[in-house]
Amino acid sequence: MAIEPGRREFGPGQGRITLLTARDGLAAQAGHDLTIEAARWSGQLAVSDAGSPAELQVRVDLGALVVREGSGGLKPLTDRDKREIAVTARKTLRADRYPEATFTATDFEPGANGGGTIVGTLTLAGRSGSQRLNVSETGPGLYRATTTVRQTDFGIKPYTAFLGSLKVADAVRVDVELDLSRPAQQEAVA
Image 1 (tube, helix red, strand yellow):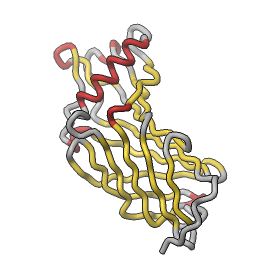
Image 2 (tube, rainbow, N blue to C red; image 1 turned 60 degrees about the vertical axis):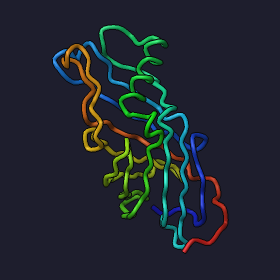
Image 3 (tube, helix red, strand yellow; image 1 turned 45 degrees about the horizontal axis):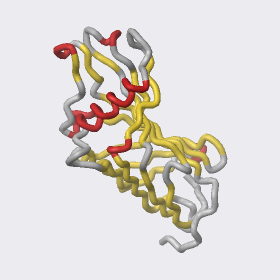
């Protein structure tokens, strides 16, 4: 993960964080696999003079989750359905009590072709746990990180409907796309 040295602050203008849910249960065909975007988030990255990441912190505003699309299901999602699902997601995540999810990196493991692994602590719904992100370089200065978050690991009960016959799967895939091609602030990082 060789990146230009310095400090960077970034957010939706430089990338995108999406949550991808899957449906489960006997009535799964009635539900939708969802793509939910974090509309407000911020991050700070410090890169050492050697070009390797030294610090990373990301904050996601859980009150600003937007349902972008739903695939499958018996009928297409309407705009009203999307708004209602976003409200339900915020309730499920207890965003009124824990309005922010945070990720703080604790280790960076370089890999092949400019990628690698970032290990850190994810705090969600008032609980913290270790989380591992797999990173790949998709172009010059362009990165993609993926991970899977198990809701129950953070005390979150996945959403259910129809007496439990339709539910959101426990595992939620998280995709992060980030453009670090712009110059960093030229501040020395140890």
